[in-house]
Image (cartoon, rainbow, N blue to C red; front, side, top):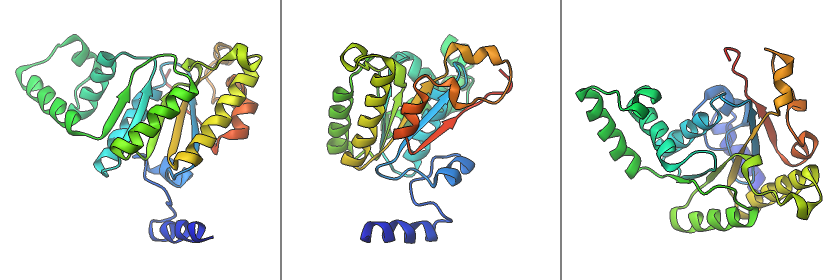
Length: 234
């Protein structure tokens, strides 16, 4: 009960926010921040800026001196770097990627690189990782850097060991259960991204629903919250 009361007192002092702020006011308010033991799923269609949002959250945490780790399994080190530089410099990502920059822009780029190198935003770009490997790396990052939030980008790019678990649905169920257990055991918050199925595009331009997620029932059973992101302009 002591931990429960401590969380309640903290929330009372911080306008209902018990966990760490996520850099987006409405999102932080809705979730109550990210607390140890939390397992959140953020799902969206491709191109809906899921990864960019996670980088934004990580760099916001860094401002608060809260270390975080991202498993970026979709992009390379260079691709992730382009987004980080754009985020820190305020430059357009496409201009950074193509190096279409003025002399003043280059100064901004070098300043951004310096800030990134000094930050407590850690990124692992190894693809197709198993749950045991992810857990081992998170534990090491906790021991070495004191991370409090881990991000996995994204669920279906992990090695879910489908054959071992007897199919897609059981594999997703096992993965999500293990993620929730990991968050509790390691006392950190875990945010995992997920991508909508191709069938979701058949519905045209409308707000998403849980049926867009492969293994939605298994995900709902383990996640503390499932956030469906939507880009109405796409």
